[in-house]
Length: 393
Ligand code: 7TS
Image 1 (cartoon, rainbow, N blue to C red):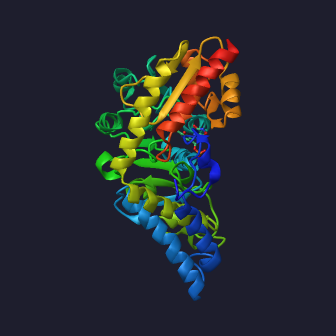
Image 2: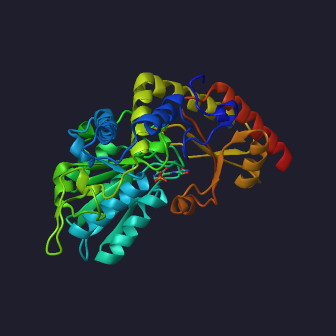
């Protein structure tokens, strides 16, 4: 791609699920910010601070529109998906969980949608319930429906699996939970680069994602939360920015979204994320989906022809991830041979160890695509896997 900021594109970069490469527009926006606009936000009376604040808040507004949130108040800047989930677990959990309550997650969660819940459950006496996953990599929706009860305080599931690519039936998950007045958090880390997200159409209570997986910078992400929940929740961190008045007797808190944004934020990161939103909007979700779907279908078709290959994650509804194993070989060795050919894939458990245990495998080789990948990348991958098969068997 001629608009790419990185020469990594010259190689076969097939690890965008871990982190995407950056278009020139994103790097350029951050560069411009640091050269011309930088000052701290929300404080100075001077013009430069106002300009920095405007750039920061403009980025928030771009995200609000991108995910169709009702207002900027409900769109919080966080460090990424991990911090978004920790914020909800810590703040919502402290306020609403008690002994005997239950939190529902699934067997295909990334560790960052498991461990924060374990930590808050330990503190509050709540318990985790886990929706089972089939061999193909789909959620057992009947088991989920039966799991919901008056004890359930929250459902937290992944929208698109980073290991399998499964697109979960989140509309149905939310509908079933809401029928019992249970709020739902979606981990959108792998959904946001590929799917059009409309938080109002979903009626989701919390939606969180990372900037760096959607062509933005690292260190910045978003937590969307319904205003009624965010108002009811205590602050996550204390410090500057999040207060209204401070005294040793009593401190009062700032209004949303600032109540949850203690300290100087990643201003340049927010600006970069805003540029990433504009980049995705300029391509259009339909074009992104169509291109990636073609790559996925082509990749699956070609890889399937290789003797001894076993695809992991064959759900009907899938996004841009192909995980596989090669008979008689270790994923690490396959990854190493591919690397020698200039093909970047991820190998291992992909931060989903419980899912690996469920499927009875140590890990996978994972190729993941983004909008800048091409059929040639897939051809090189297939060639590489064939070579690995020959060398390792
Ligand atoms: N949730 C999912 C579904 C993810 O895929 C990831 C990162 C996270 C949460 C955490 O995001 P972070 O930006 O806060 O770190 N997934 C991966 C991956 O698949 N390979 O490297 C990171």
